[in-house]
Length: 256
Image (cartoon, rainbow, N blue to C red; front, side, top):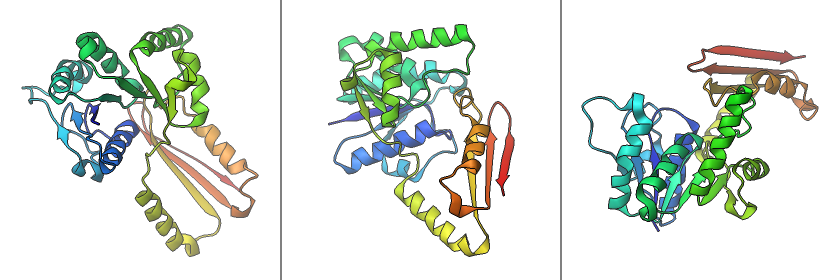
């Protein structure tokens, strides 16, 4: 089986990191899992990418970064016709417009599309009219997607409601944003520092983007420091550092 994923670039992002790690996992398990990259730019190239078959379009005279979605829609059909994949993997919500375009442009030549839901679908951060339009877009795209992937079991009711799909169209694949190797390295690092401080510190790092705005940073910090599930780790410091097009910030709180 051949699964073709498509990404704009190696710019740092959870969607891109997860897609590359999934492709590497599929390849390890004997599948052909090429990844079409709209451009080779970006500082988020993880080690898994070195082991993958990456496909690039002919380099245009000007960088397509400002029009990356249109560039992907223009170049991906040729790759699909040439590679003839059994499945087209849509890595996240922001790529769904490309997936829909492939179904419209290629018709019966487009392989089944498996789309991963990477963000909140309620979008309570949006004004009511914009939220209504977004929910309408979810309903419009749903018939073009053959199968949906949720990152957690708890996401399934929201996906079924907003996309109007049946439960058997939704599969759950835990989010591999952090690899086993990453976890082991972090655990070793923590073990080496355990004797240097009392209590426990938590640091969360994230980007402030349109999709990131719904994430309740201060609520997370308050809940963490007030948690009764962590009575043995007092004192507890929690710091969240964020950066992105909406600015940078450092939010922190300390429990006694």
